[in-house]
Structure formats: structure tokens, C-alpha cells
Amino acid sequence: MGVQWAARQLERHQVNTGSKEAVGGKFSAAAMAHARVMTWKAIEQIAAAIRPGMRESEATAQSKSILEALGMDRIWHPVLIRFGENTLRIFKERSEGDPVLGADDIFFIDLGVVWNQHEGDAGATFVTGSDLEMRRCARDAKIIYDEVAIHWRSTGCSGKALYAFAAARASAYGWRLNVDIKGHRVSDFPHAIYRAGDLGDFETVPAAGLWILEIQIAHPTRAFGAFYEDLLA
Image (cartoon, rainbow, N blue to C red; front, side, top):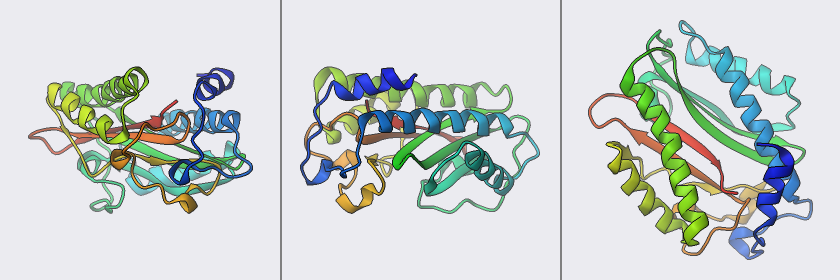
């Protein structure tokens, strides 16, 4: 996933400058692509540094040091690292306690970071041991994301239709989609001034390079889930 490839993908689509897809004067598709690449680089480094026996709070503190070392501008949404049962909790919910990561466990990382004045936002799930259902859950969150992104590219459907499709795909794999997580805007910092609402409520076709597709799934009977998000590009 190089910067040039990502920039070409963004430039294939013309950005709608309406109120829900507005961008600032410093917006650059190449800079958005760079923010995406750097955020994934950070996730890879943070995941590699998380070990069984570590507490959630320790992993979060360590992640901030890694982000600073990579040269971030700032964090635009709080770093979210969830262990075990806390993988079922959505962004707005606090973790339950400060759990220790087990040797046969699951965790996810959710980063919102500004690089060169543009917002990166990405997240992924990881497994520490050999639990087959945990491994499948982490894998399927990424598979469902990919299928939904392909559906967007091939059909040009609305954001609302994308999440209906995502729920159907999650069910087909045996998981429950958390419908309270519906994706959101990103842009040159800060995107929040545009008040775009959730991707899952967006009634028209979302433009490339401006929306984060979030997928959070839950096991139907066990107390864990998985999360994956990335830029639609």
C-alpha cells in the first residue's frame, strides 16, 4: 500500500464539495493517502509491541510513544486499545476495568492520528494464541470490510446501503454486526467542522478518500468481537 498507489486510487473519483463532503483549503488527496499509510505503519508497530501480561492502559501509553517516534502531528481521536471482552465495546464506551492480555486472547487497535495536517484513521484486530474462533473473528472482520469496499466500488451504492450489505455479510459468516458503528468522515484536520454525520446514514454515494468504513462484529455466544476500519479509496 504505497503512497503513489493510494493517491491514484483517490484521484479516480471527483470529490463532492457539498456540505457533507466539504474539504479545507489545504486538502490534498496525496496527503490523505500518506496519512493512511502512516496510520497503518503505526498499527503494525503498536501491535508488534503488545504482549501477553500487558494491561490495556500500558498498551495505550506505549502506543503514544510509538506515534510520537513516527512523527505524528497530533492525535485527533483518543487511542483505543481493547483487550478480551472489551472488544465488544464501541468507541464511546469506556473499557471495563484494566484487563491483562492473556496468552490465548484477542485485542484490537483503533487509531485516529493527524499526519501533515491530514487525518488518518484505521483499526485492526489481533490474536495472541491459537483459539480458532478468535482467529476467525479477527480474519472475518477484515474480509467483511474488503467485501463491503468492493461492493461500494462496483455498485456505487449509498453509505446507508453499504451498511445493510455489511450486516448481511456478517450474518453470512456467523457474526453479528454492531450497527451502532457506522463509519464517519475524515479530511484535512479538523473534519468535524463539516458535521457530515455517519457513513451508515449517508443517503448518496460516498466519495473516495473522505469516508472511513468501520466494521465491528461480535461472536454470537462468546464474549469477544473484532474490529476493522480503513479509508474507502
